[in-house]
Image (cartoon, rainbow, N blue to C red; front, side):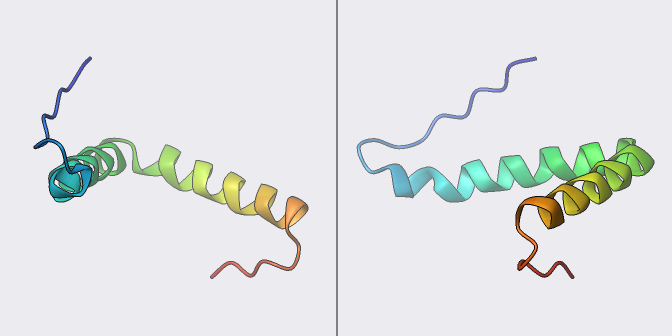
Length: 59
């Protein structure tokens, strides 16, 4: 699947709100569609972060 988002030129910052809104909708959709798998992967990520960065506190 390809989703194309056009942003105004030449300033990249003008289109950032559009891009982040689109990303937020996509991530929210994935979380709603596969909540258990997402929670499992977040847990795996948190565990691996503790191995590489033991001084980093996760909440």
